[in-house]
Structures are given as C-alpha cells and as structure tokens.
Amino acid sequence: MAEILKYDIVIFGGGTSGCSCAYTCAKNNLKTLLVEKNNFLGGLMTGGLVVPVMKSSVENLNCNYYNDLVKLSKKFNAQITYKDKNDGWFNPQLLKIILDELLNFSNLDILFETYPTKASVNKNKVVDTEIKSDILSLPIEAKYYVDATGSADFSYLCNCEFIPQNEIQQLSSLRFVVGNVNLDKFCEFIKQVDDDENITNTYRSDIDTNNELHFTTASVNDDNKIWALDKYLKKGVEDNILKESDRAYFQLFSIAGSNNEVAFNCPRMFNYKDNPFMMSNELKNARRAIYRLYQFAKRYFPGFENSTITNIASQTGIREQRRVKTRYMFTKDDLISQKHFSNPVLKANYSIDIHGDKKNSSVLQKTLPYELPIDALISAQYDNLFVIGKILGADFSAHSALRVQKSCMSMGEAVGKYIKNQI
Ligand SMILES: Cc1cc2nc3c(=O)[nH]c(=O)nc-3n(C[C@H](O)[C@H](O)[C@H](O)COP(=O)(O)OP(=O)(O)OC[C@H]3O[C@@H](n4cnc5c(N)ncnc54)[C@H](O)[C@@H]3O)c2cc1C
Image 1 (cartoon, protein in one colour):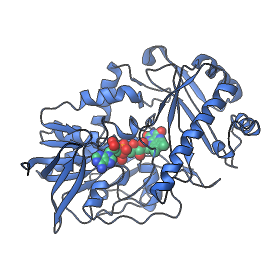
Image 2 (cartoon, protein in one colour):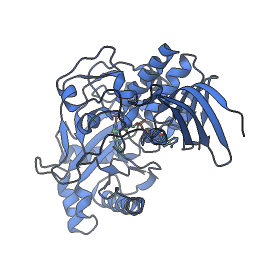
Image 3 (cartoon, protein in one colour):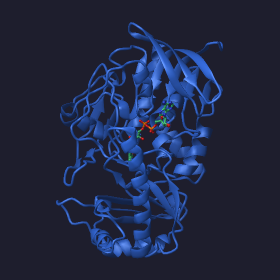
Image 4 (tube, rainbow, N blue to C red):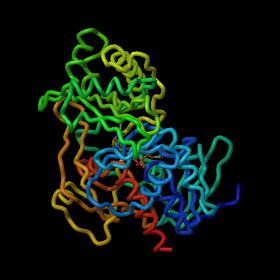
C-alpha cells in the first residue's frame, strides 16, 4: 500500500474553475494538489474550444486569477480585448501552455491523466480519497476537497445528493475550429449581408491585436427574429449540404493570436442524453454535422474557399449536467430580485441563457447585477467539500447565467480564499 499523501486541499478538475482555485490556494501558501483527467489544463476553455469568455458588464469580485491570466496571455500573444472592452478573447491552444506557466508553484502538485476512484466520509466530513492513473493508485488525505470536475464526479463518489434535473435541459454542443480562412474576405462579406451590430461585428485594433482582424456572428432558427445568415443556411438545406437541424444554432468567432482560424459554437447535440450508447452515437452524428457545416462554409462563405478543419473539441461541450445540493440553493428569484449576501463570491450580470432542445425554447434574458453566496458552493452534507463551476448549487435558470467562464473563475478564487481563512 502506497504511503498516504497529505495536502491542505485537493482540487479535482483542472478546468475553468479548478485552475482558478488551485492558483489562489497556491498563492496563499496552501499545500495543494490538482487532479486532472485530461493531459492538459483548461477544461472547456482549452479542450472544449469554448471562446470567448462571455462578458459581464459589472465590476466583478474575485478576479485576480482572471486578470493574471489575461496579463500572461498578452505576453504569449494569445489574448485580445474586443471592441466592447471584453478582454476575455483567448487562444485555446496556447492557453494550455499558459496555464502550465501560470500554475507553476512549488507548493502546487498537478497530476494529469489522473482521477478519483474512492472517497471515504465520516459524518459531515470527507476523510480521504484514492486517485488513480494508468500506472498507479494513490491514497490522499486533505483538510479540504474541491470538486471542479464539471460533472460532479467527486461529489458522486461521496454520495452527495444532486438537484433533480429540470424538465428542459441545456443542449450540449461539439465545438470545432476551421483554419486557413481569409478573414478579410469573410468579414467584408458578413458586414455586407448583416449590418446588425449586435450580432455581427468586426474589429481591428493596432494596439490590442497586432493588427489582427476579429469578428463575431450568429444565426438562430427561432421565430422571434429573422437572422441575416439564415438565408444561406436555408439554401444549404435546399442544396442537400446541410440538414434542417444544422440551422438550429450557428455561431462563429475569430480566435486571438490565430488570424486565419474561425471557432464554431455548434453543432448542437439533440440526443446527447439518457445513456452512454445514445451519447456515443450522438458524438458521431455531431462529427458528421461538423463536416456538413464545414462543406457549407467552404461553398457559401467568401474567405472559406481554401479552409480546412484544424480542430474538433476533445472535450464535449456539456453546458449542464449534475448540480450538487449545497448549503444554500441559489434560485432565479434570488438572481432577479438582486438579493444581497454578505461577502458575495461574485457580482455579475450575464443573462439567463438557456439553449433549449426545441425550436423557440431557448432563452436569453437580460438581468441586472446579481450576487452569489459562498454557501451555494459548500456541500449540504460535508463541511469540507466545495463544489465550483457549473456544478454549483443553483436552480436551472440561475445556473444558466452563472455557468459562464468568468463567474466560474470567481467561484474558484472565492473558495480558495475562503479555505485559506479557515486553515
Ligand atoms: C458548448 C458550450 C459553449 C459555451 N460558450 C461559452 C462562452 O462562449 N463563453 C463563456 O464564458 N462560457 C461559455 N460556456 C460555459 C463555460 O465554458 C462552462 O460552463 C465553464 O467553462 C465550466 O467550467 P468548469 O470549471 O465547471 O468545467 P470545465 O472547464 O469543463 O473543467 C472541468 C475539468 O475537470 C476535469 N475532470 C472531469 N472529470 C474529472 C475527474 N473525474 N477527475 C479529474 N478531472 C476531471 C475535466 O477534464 C476538466 O478539465 C459554454 C459552455 C459550453 C458547453
């Protein structure tokens, strides 16, 4: 039996929220272990190809990690500030290297390709755990445990209670990137066909972007609005290049530090649910859809003529899965009524944003600034177990607003600071 390794804190999941928590703990001199099942850090920000960070236009709290990430990414030419002042446009590939660099502390051990297999609990405490890689199992004991897995894997091992699934679930997507695109040509095209500055806009700044050209555009097949690009998607369906389902949600962004690549926030996966057989099949369907969307762009979009698929997300884009029962269950009413909490974890105003599974069931509802209490991140059953990121204790609608990256990073930082104060 291997000797038990002891830490102040063990964090499971080195993704969006987990990296922030590990960084904060390490900076605060806690002996920290970060356990990540992928062979890189970043989670959805890297493996999921999820760019950019959605903007929240209020002064957020607990943003030291985020600001340090922006600062270091600038040095790698892997970040831009868009014209709406959103400085969260990162390069997902370079971010893997940047996160290794940012999280380089002597009191922080990072284990890749490793995951928890057991947890033992006693009354209201998690006592210890076992983690496993391909070649070794290791017993670990910590004062505090943080589940940042996005799927609540560690909480599951601890037999935590989960919040029952909502009737409507957030749809998942498999994101991908197309390279060798002539962005000048494509941006000219979208500016001509869609002059709606809210949806389609382009930006070139000598100062922030090394003269890179950037853009964002989208098209959604709902009845409340006619989207300019939809006539091309419709034509793609008529010409048998696309399927009707490919029109459901179509969104494109440029990528910082890679000025011939375009990130696709699609296709949606309507049947990624219920059981592993259906989910696996749906991943194959998603890759077929990616090929259709790529062929479509090549044929109908000026600038894509010589393009090629350069990346398909290695991490599935799951917007919402398990949410853990916490000491305080944050609700849509709390969010809408702008309920105040002492020492909030974050302040944000990102919208209630539901990717519904039926036509016209999606929601993008603007909100006023809201706060989140720390108790929505502490397990209801165990005093030393924290849940951060998209598994937090919030109802379905409140979760849809809080799941964005900047808020997830603030959760990680707030929990790191909270634990520091307890030790
Ligand atoms: C398709 C899609 C589009 C989105 N678009 C945007 C957007 O444009 N802007 C925005 O701000 N937000 C967006 N979001 C939301 C946001 O990206 C996520 O909610 C957020 O990144 C979740 O962070 P997290 O830390 O909870 O999970 P993740 O970032 O997924 O991190 C979880 C980490 O845990 C690891 N892990 C999982 N299981 C284990 C295990 N058993 N053991 C060890 N490690 C494990 C994973 O490998 C991963 O590294 C989007 C989400 C999706 C799915």
